[in-house]
Amino acid sequence: MKQGQQEGMTRRDFARMSATAGFAIAAGRAFSADINSDTLKVGLIGCGGRGTGAAVNMFEGDNNVVLTAMADVFEDKVKGSLNSIKNHDNPKVSGACAVDEDHCFAGLDAYKQLIATDVDIVIHGALPYCRPQHVEAAIDAGKHVFTEKPVAVDPDGIRRFIAASQKAKKKKLSLVAGTQRRHQKEYIETIKRIHDGDIGEVLAMRAYWCGGLPFARERKPEWSDLENCIRNWYGFCWMAGDNIVEQHVHNIDVCNWVMGGPPKSVFLASGGRTWKPDDPKYGDIYDHFSCDFEYEGGAHMSSFSRHWHHSADGVFEDIVGTKGRSNGKRIGKWRAERGINPYVQEHIDLVKSVRGEGPYYNEGERVAASTMTAIMGRMAAYTGQRYTYKKALEISLNLVPEDLSFDKEYPLGPVPSPGA
Image: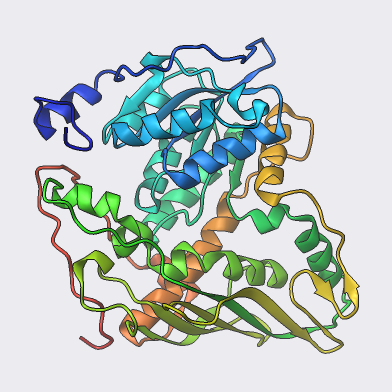
């Protein structure tokens, strides 16, 4: 059987079938979930590792939240995620699984089917390219949302996401993003001290995401262009945004947090493809970036991100002020007290916001600004040009094809070269 198909069916048949009905799998409600009037129902869109992990984290943090619907482009992803959750070794997680077979959806429009169910909260763990569209649809339907980062791959997507976030605010819908450092006790306490003047005026910052290679999958003969892009999504700029957007956004977000907003411009930027060979499985993205961002008031942030094999790793931030410096978790000899797992805490905060038991959270515009900062850096490195934040945000640029189909060709583009 082809991945993403049922036996004896063409891709077109499968897409047509999955657009109108959920597929049948052995998912019945043979679990311990106790659904009552206070129980919040959760739907998971995007059943890969991060989406499944986000669902697990939500159930680790709350005893009265249950999973009732799942959706992904591919059937095997839904099956794998469901099996992982219902057989989890933490009874809080396995006990929160209450997914009926008619609430499991596959196909490019599966997210619409899930949103049409009675879920209260949507966890969006699908790929960055579709995040603005999916989150917009969830908010239009009156759902609270947890969305992973980054929230778009281009300026058009950022503007669409911001509009959806503003709509959520008007509807009093909670929206929490997967920039988990914003919910991490060590970062919260440290940055409060920075804002209170403990290191004086911020002069400069450094932000790093330097690590090894992410996954890169060999294309299978039966995969169409679109399936290859989705299965090997990290290698395509239009799918993931390149590594500065997909991963380094975390560190950029911390620096924006320190400064109270995004930089006014990216002064200089460069990047390229040094380690990754000219192999289609590595897609069309760079493997390193360096950017010099300038904030209002003159402070600069030096940003470095890379994926190199067997290289020195480092993921951190360094903030230098007139009276001291901080690495985001400590200032001088002072160290912040460690809190609970921030991947769990962000879901605790979301659920409390939904229930009205804590502060109201809508992090949409904030995470959009940090994502746009990373996109601006990528644009500057790709083109060799300087961009202001305002100019970059207003540019009409949409990397995502308007019509997605397993029957269409999506050829691999060249690796960007400044000036070309």
